Image (cartoon, helix red, strand yellow):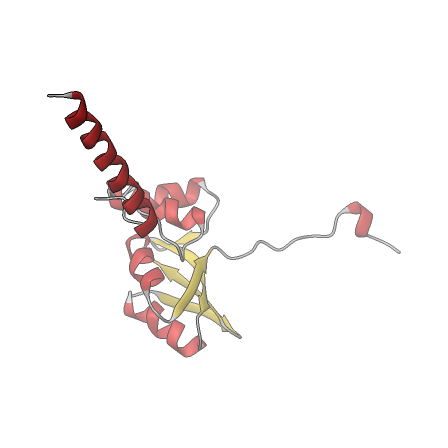
Length: 141
């Protein structure tokens, strides 16, 4: 192989890499490399663990997420209406626990986190916020 052919191959590879980067196409993806844009990082880790070996609940517990009846407690932020987000939860066989404004709190199986996050009714899926107690500097007057 001549030097000119080798340079052409290297340049073609560089052009292909740039095209993939611009288009967002990284080629084939395994469950470990899939990015879930509408899942919090902790829930994305649960989903990856579930898809790669069925250890989603184990990872959820280790991350401090609440688990009940084989499901993870999540908050679904509705894209438009709470009723549509509720329907998205029910569509993945989740159980609605509470709802307020544009938020739906639900118990969802780890494997259902992906389909739930891809719903057009969902803006974001995250763990519930932990209540914050006032620190010593905030107590008193």
